[in-house]
Length: 347
Image (cartoon, rainbow, N blue to C red):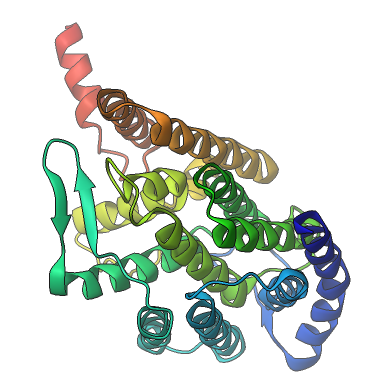
């Protein structure tokens, strides 16, 4: 039945996306080119409605039972509404943040879902107590916006999200978490169907309607699937979401170093750096897909490793990320601490 639901979601996205394209032009929900945009033509930008509609079609076939389901779906509707209003009216950052905060609170209250503790090697379980509320909100809002920030090239956010959702599905299968498995797999199929219209050259953008929805669902599913995993509870979804999280983290580092607001827009995100390095639009997206797949594989390996094996793997991942960031200039062209250290040692 899961494959039937996934097929329905995939086909649903293929049918709904052209309808959403027409609807977007009719209501004026379009993205116009400017100095920060890569595209040169007016594009419809509420593709997230097609992803959401396709997801609901697949979800309705199975209706997976879980105590958290109602809160997650209500939160998703709130996120979709916020994204749609932003795509239509370009609402303020504060209004978007408020909507995300409300959605996160709904997940915690109606959905009864939050990060209560974390397991650390050699230290055991650390209970968060009252800090569990702000930590859960920070996780949901942070991952939601991380997916939103990488939505800068045709097919980038949809592809990376699909890879992350497939990784979550694999982990849920290993852990026998049926609700997370079903929900993530159906959403991955919906995103993949939309990607047929969103890959370069795109016919439609997902807009904030899509990127916020996918980011929200990924954050919640990752939290639901891995919040009580032994060893290091949240390291697995962090590795799994390595592309958007690292891009967001180094964007903050870059802006602090440049003495700019951490919310200031720029053209130095991962995809911008790869484009400047000489990769084409399509090559850049495929390279980032490859990186996302490697992160997904690393997350699965991490979950199956011993404590010392997990620590070693984590060290290798962090070192590889740092070297890659320094080489492509993700944190700034003059940010090269390890490369400079290696150069000094080599003299």
